[in-house]
Image (cartoon, rainbow, N blue to C red; front, side, top):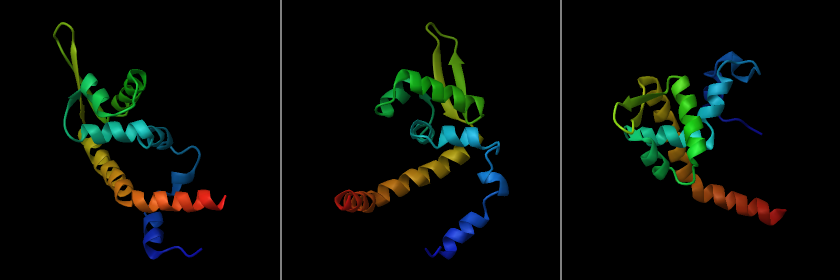
Length: 131
């Protein structure tokens, strides 16, 4: 298989330890590149949201999964959790500057999927038909 110059250039820019099993980026990368992590950060790129609004916006995510992923993104400094001293407390989530820079990249990835879904589905159908 021939690798394009563009692919070689992208690969050349990766840090050398990216493929090391002990690379410190692995845990956070696993969180943010998962289905829910990417969608949460992309949703928050639109602006701050309260928990219930975020859950409504991201179809299919359970309260438990949203809570776990938000906790993880807050832990890694990607999302800020702001609690208003009301009864009951109102919690708003927003991206930190670090989270904004990552969300920009993730939104580009999500856009790529949307742009290429027809070709992806056609390839899947060809593969399934050949099985």
